[in-house]
Image (cartoon, rainbow, N blue to C red; front, top):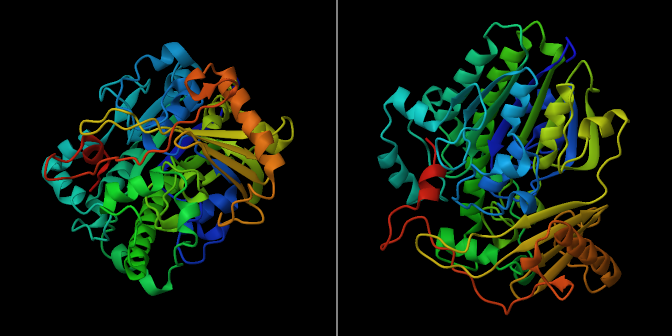
Length: 485
């Protein structure tokens, strides 16, 4: 291995939209530390989560394999212990095998909870709870009941889990040692509840934040999972949330982003304080986005940009240019190759060589695929098949849903807000991307989604995806696991 191998630090957030970084064009949000990363490196402005929901996105990162390969396309609580046999060593173990000291801190969202993810040192939310004496069960019940409403956390910033995660990351970065480090620092915000601490809860004026994109409800709800999620959160499929409530939620969401930015800044300061700061590759990204009222919807799992497109920043002063934008199609799946290439022993698996395409010695991705399916069995409900698939190519995005055989086509350059379905005037483009989707599924042997050489279609059915808290059932395990102080 090269003697001057860089450190590699992944900083991950949960449910952070791609358009929440001031330096990349959102003047309504204050993110001075993410702006530092933008100025210090390369911003990948067309980066996507291949499965825009928590569990499969994290499996993308740790395996370097697409959701259709891992078999996880929704928040399935199945054991992931078989994934190393299927995909190869998890990323942390792969980096350890390459001579790296490894640590992981924060949210991992893998099952079973004690799964060995390959880190030399691994700290999660249970460690935070034990250290602070938190009765997490009581706290979960309180937040789950009003998960999507704007609220204020009574804890000061320094007592929040996000601060604890940053504290532990700084400790790891201050450790001495000859081996380079690979670290994952994984925050569980700005995932709801929308509960920044003071003063971040009043940092933004709701009347000054951008309105949600809400035009054609029929177009917005062509993917049945969007109205189903609305009912899951609000008991209303149509989402008639008042504009004033939406703006207040957005102000609180921005407050969480800025509170997170404060903690990320402390981590970046610890990186900068080391002698090897210039030879440290920092990757910042999120697992997926959040509709936040756009398209008459909330949450994730759809393939609208607000849900599936993510922030993705790379900073490596010794090797990468500063202050540049890269509009290549990039995926969370590529992070495995980014880390292992930096380690001097590249392994790209289902990803592409992003660093190589930036410096000019590799070809960028020509087409990107996305997949999602809500698990059919939950503690409360049986959900019918609802597989959806996205194909991104150039400026075009094609989306197909087996539920009703519904499809949509958007031109993301001409229509960045995705308010005009281009299927009627561009059927040739849709046909080409549909064929690409079929070939992709055939390549991975995903025959459940194919029928007679075409994409599977089932009669349209409304979905009932349950709710975090109901009269009949306690807070679901998913709601409990994803809540955060």
